[in-house]
Length: 310
Image (cartoon, rainbow, N blue to C red; front, side):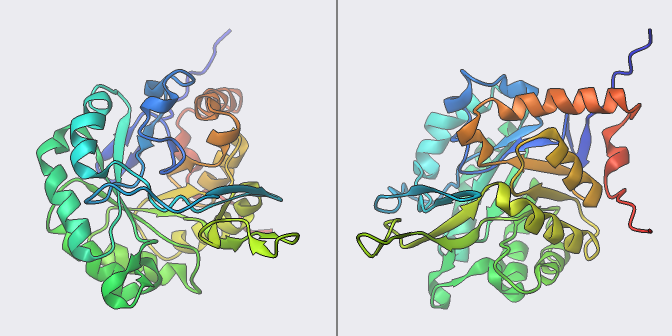
């Protein structure tokens, strides 16, 4: 009996991944935290926690709360800072066979630039950068970078000048026109878009009449987000020509297939990692079974193949 062995590899610009499954920033640590649960080299790639110029301790507790349909988080970009990342985290990451993508955050364009400039000396050990634009721009009165197309263009242009590595621009859904943001990133030299980041949410303790999270609001993620995320990917696919990484409520291989059908070339698994630490690896295996069972020789056949004519 002939058993089809499907090709799960996909391309993000010039970067080839063994499969379309990546882990989302902030849900998978620096990779080493999950090595007991997951064969990391089985994944298409991992995205690190956001790296900032200096270490950050993050927001006061509580930082996480489960809510109907998902969870709220307000971690506050807690991380070791770029210097310790290079000295303490890169040695482990550089040994991985899967693609490593470094997520970068900052409070000004100069801060983003400083992180990328510092990481230049170890660029041979990772595949590219993901730029977290859901950070407040302190020089613009706290306006989130990613909510303004002009700012998206400005920061993407600035970072494009510093590196030839893959530049993934992570978009916020907390806007009226995500297509405008995606187009700005593309025109400024971004190679790939990742979407969506979390929606702003709030949980209330009615007995104490206080917000549950120490930061008051947090980022809402989880299964309830999937339909909203799919619509944003569809909007982006019909606006830009660069590859898109889909994020939002992905827990199974069928969720991955939905994102690919509406136009995503790859996906990131986020909240599901907290529930089932080895879920990403399981999804890769289930994608292989699906493609084999449906005689799909290359998973790229699915990208953007949603049939909308009734």
